[in-house]
Each structure stands twice: as structure tokens, then as C-alpha cells.
Image (cartoon, rainbow, N blue to C red; front, side, top):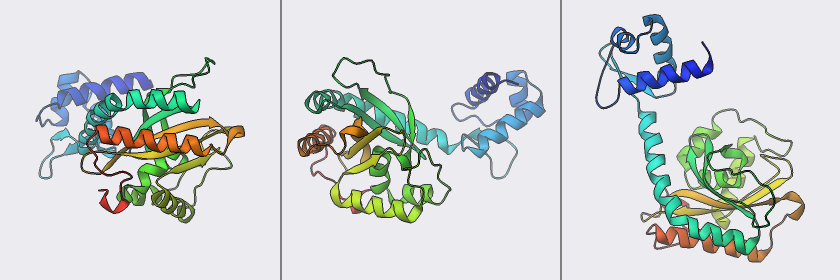
Length: 256
């Protein structure tokens, strides 16, 4: 079975379980016209990732909690992106840097909006890409304002993307404390050699940090000018105000 076939079959099984449907392996196998053994393997894999859950007292399956988290990220992302677009465009114009807007997706950050550098150079659009949360300025901001997520991420081995990637949990916790103190997260060559970034938190009406915005520059131009940091802070503050946040920067103690 190819990867594409596996994805197609997993999607069919999830569609069968949509709504409040609870189905057993034989029922799912009949619905998707596949052998029960094949369906059982796919369901077990989906269950491992929280996309499918089994009834506590039975043999039927239902949609899992991870789908709820993904849908919440998606819905939040729509509003954040809509509110942020004019501010990120202005930030790119003022700083001459590429701008990323990202939200947490488990152990990764997904880029939900990207403004290219306004220098007319050829650049790849990054909307939709994911970056390990521990190796990005965006991710460090999101971890600093979500201690529970930080605990989960730092409890597992962290991959090294370059010689500069921080992978030691104690070092990362010190870095997160600096983020909380400054309201800014930084990374130098940690995800991609030759690329560095600095990020600031974006909060909603409950002062909960739900996203982060960053400016990205060649490492040869590091560190950013004070004026660029001020522009970044102002963009994060304005996006947060658009989302109903009355006080910026948010406090880590208020994040949940």
C-alpha cells in the first residue's frame, strides 16, 4: 500500500465516523470496502495519533480528541489571519523583512500567513509549512506562554536541525524564561542555516496567546535594528487589539 493509498483510506474511515457515529471494525470495513484486517491496522494507527478513539466499554470507534484540537486551531487561525494581514504587510514594508504568522500545532508551528520580503526577489511562499516548535522564534514564544505545552514538548527527545539548534530541555527553559521577560523570542540558524528570526506574541480578548508574528532575515544581517524590534512589537500589539486584547504584552501567568 502506497502512502497516498494509506491517506485516502484513513480519510474514508474518518468520513465514516463523522458526526456522532460509532462503528466497529467490520462495519467500517464494509463501508469502505476493504478487508477488516486492513481497516483494523489503519484504525489502530489513527488511534495512536488521537484521531480515532475507542468506546471505553465496547469495540466500536469514534472520532478522537485530536480532531477537535485541529479544528480549533483551524477556526482560530481564520480569525487571526484575517485580523493580521494588513499589519503583517505593513511590518514587512517597514522592516524590509519577510514576515510569518504562526500558530501551535502540537510539537510544530504552522505558518498561517506569510509576507515575502518587499525587495522583489524570488521567494517561496511559506503559508502552510510547519517548523519544529523548539527551533523557531515563533515556537519559543508559543511555548513560553503555554507552560503545559512546553512541559509536553520538552518531555520528549528534540530533533536537531542544525548545529545551532537547542535540544537540551534545561537550556530551552532558560530561553523561554527570557522570552517571557522580554516578550520576544529569537532564533539564529536553528531551523535553517543562514536564516534567523525574532517573534512576538499575539493574544486574544482573554489575553491568551494564540499566535505569534515574526520577522525573518538572513543571519548576515543579525541582529535586527531596534527600530525593527519596535515595529514588530507594534504589529503584535495591533493584531492583539484587533482580536480584543486590552493589555499587551500579555503575561505568562495569564496564559492558559
